[in-house]
Length: 87
Image 1: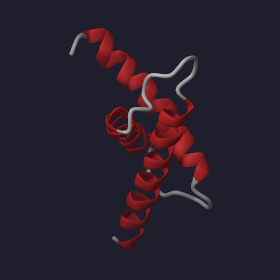
Image 2 (image 1 turned 120 degrees about the vertical axis):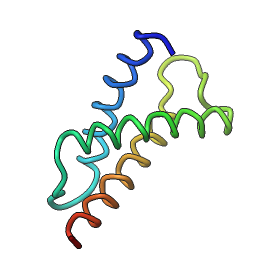
Image 3 (image 1 turned 180 degrees about the vertical axis):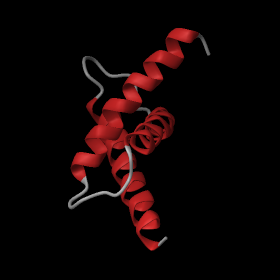
Image 4 (image 1 turned 135 degrees about the vertical axis):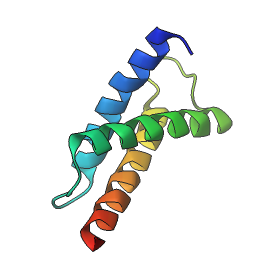
């Protein structure tokens, strides 16, 4: 992976993590770094899933891929937030 790929993954991770966090109702007790990390992981897994489902390359904006990534980020944010509350 080139440096431009790493930078774009971080930027996309920030956006996906923030959107995922907005989707989850209530207060999340995780920091911004956790949100970014979850967003990056969700973006990577979501891209792989979208590619596997053959919906990653469409004309225009890849809305289905974005929805998959945001849903994964929301699940990740909720899971980490719930795990932090237990401790």
